[in-house]
Image (cartoon, rainbow over all chains, first blue to last red; front, side):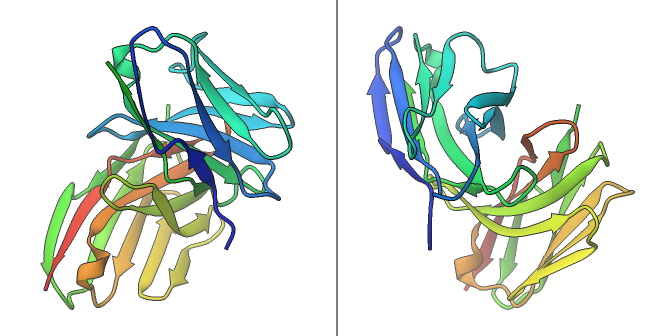
Length: 113
Length: 112
């Protein structure tokens, strides 16, 4: 069964460093998403992406964040200058069309020191 | 702004019991509602999706209902098993955006 994959599974970085989180969505899906979950808190929406552009972004997704689909299979989230409060589990998701089942990847646990 | 609430926050039941998890949302303008399972430190596994036009959706021992007008959904788990122990999340996809809004989850423990 097709699934969303994410790399790396864990990343530790120093405050102020740039990180890139990678995702490979399900191959025939057209909508891509990033969510995050701070330990003990709700899953929060960051950004949705369709047709090579951002469809919607939350108030969390400020200028420090960017997304890209560099080729036909990868979808990346870049955090330009990490802060301590960026420590969280980051989930990538994809769906075939917008209001349909979203399939989530296993997540990348980011720890900013 | 959509708010999603789940009750109870935690539930512990003996194996074999039938149980109901509750989810409520404040804005009834939704496309669908999705139930997920999350195991500790892991990703989200989609269990069921109910479209806004549907009242019910079933998958094996799981049955989800939706009452859009009252802003409520329930997830019914029949004959619970220890392997059902996990956190169950509900999330709604609103008509005014392209995001899922999540509840806090219900942490379920099924005791053998």
